[in-house]
Image 1 (cartoon, helix red, strand yellow):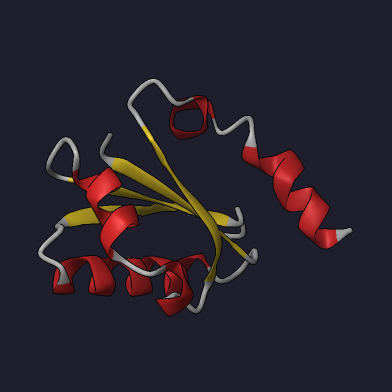
Image 2: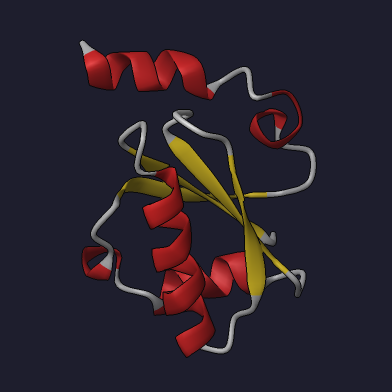
Length: 95
């Protein structure tokens, strides 16, 4: 799987995207971040098919400042296509 979803506080998507792009690049895991303003998440899409799994294994989560949770997804993920799942999750953070 080549996509990593990072949950963050709404409004900090750009910082989260910059952070994961930098830390992934340091490990030679290249890709790009998809950001939607105030959505509360970032999708980091790796260029290589299994680099999402590799990134989760090699990068200590505790080294990230802006991400609150993260997980790997594949191309069939409804979050990536329809963005249905995360708004209820981000509402929990606001409660």
